[in-house]
Structures are given as structure tokens and as C-alpha cells.
Length: 333
Image 1 (cartoon, helix red, strand yellow):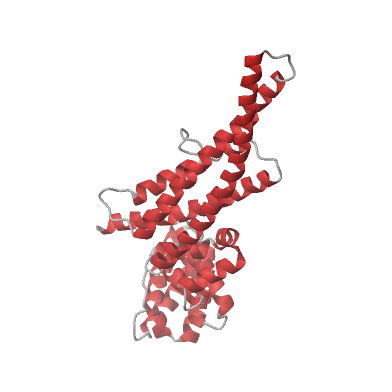
Image 2 (cartoon, helix red, strand yellow; image 1 turned 90 degrees about the vertical axis):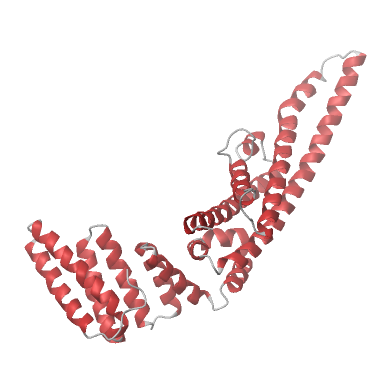
């Protein structure tokens, strides 16, 4: 598979997982309404239908079909199972929609007719309507339970899929680390902890480090900084992580033309580079020196002489420090 197509497939996996978890939480709200006897046809119609492609359940089904039913692709076995499960949930949800429509629209109408004097054939029709209503009630009860079971079983299949595919998919690793709240709501606290332990046997701290470095490779420095902050809660004395957090903060600010923030962050980062050993930060220091010099020139063009001097001085310090290093950093962006 070509690299571009592979990246699209990895993104599609992440989108599918995120949408499934969101749709599951949506259904849980519907189920709670049902238990309280507050569920309406409008509620279920906003969740599923066969004409509006933007309804949550319909959109999830179509996304799953595109990903796992591509005749030219080779979807993994667990992916085909997920697709079958999502398709089954969709059809169960459509039946729920129909049964609610029967109960909310048709039943009140024939119940009103019952108050009038009926002919024998009208009486027979009314009895049939009553049977339909009772069947719809029973079907709704059984359908809600069945849809809930399907969701719960698919949730476990999704978990197995994430465990199998997460280790080799930096995009999925990123999603897992950024979506802790969504995952906790979907799986519960224990389920979430178990999932993370399965996907990241080295521990959450190791996963945060891996995710932060992956984000840096993609130049997502703002997101990477957040992961370094979380990593430092586990390892507050890791000087390299402290340096990289400030490196990311400065780079993100530079990309947003917030030069004052960038210069402050990189001035602090330089102190950590000195403390941890300049050789380990050589590549980063060179890049910081280059960009601070660029900031200095731009500030000079804007007649901000004071800030320009600060940038040039910092650039020179960074350049001199980088020359003291004996090896490049592992990552240079």
C-alpha cells in the first residue's frame, strides 16, 4: 500500500473509533431516557435515519462500510467484525425508530377512536391496532436491550482493535492520549485503565513520551507541549522532558508570530539544555538559533529594535552552546 493511502487508512481508523465512542455515549443517553419513560420519536429520529447522511448512526455506518468493505482493500478480520456489528446496530436502531413512531403517532389516534361508538368491523380493526401497539411496546423493549448488548459487545471488539492496531499507529496513539475524557466515559475508569495498560505495557508515562515525540515529528508543537506537561507529572525530574516542553512551547509561539513568548520559552530551555548536557540538545539548539535569528531580522524590519536585540543575543548564545555539543539530538524539526 502506498504511504499516502496508508496514512488515509490510519486516519480513517481513528475517525471510526472516535465516532463509535461518541455514538455509544449518545445511545447511553437515549437508553437512560427510555428507562425514565421520557424517550420520544424525535429523540431517536435525531439519532438514526436512512436518508440524512449527517445523523450520528447513519454516518458511523457509512464510515465503517467505506473502511472495511472496500473491494480493493484487505480489511483486517477484526475490522470486518466491527463493520458487521455496526451494521446490525444501525438496523436495530431503525426498528426502534419505527416502533416509537407507532407508539407516539398511531396509538394515540386509534385510542381516540375507541371513545366513539364502533361498528363490528371497526371494532375488529381496533383490536388489530391494539395488537400492533402491544407488539410495538414489546419490540421497543426488546430492541433497546438488544441494541445495548450489541453496543457493549462491539465496545469490547473496538477495544481489541485498538490494542492490536494502536502499537503501530502513531495517529491512534495520539488519539488515545488526547481523548482520555471520551475513553473514560465510554469504558469507565477501570476499563480505561485496563485498556491503557494493554496498549502501553511500558506505562502511561512511556506512552505520553512516545506521543509527544510523534506530535513533534508532525510539527504539532502545541499538542506536544501538553503531552510533555502530562509526562512530567510522572517524571518531574526529567530534564530532557523539561527542555522539550519549553522547546515545543517556543516553537508553537513562533509559528503563531508570538515572538515574545517564543523568546522567553527558549531562553528558559537553554538553561535546561546546559543542565542536562548540551550534546543531547545540539540539533534543537541549532534550530532554535536559526529561528531566533530569523525573529530578530523580522523584528528589526518592524522597527522593534529592543526586541530584535534580545532575539539576536539569544540566537548567538544558542549558536555558541550548540557548537559545544558532540552529537545531534535524536529529533530535528
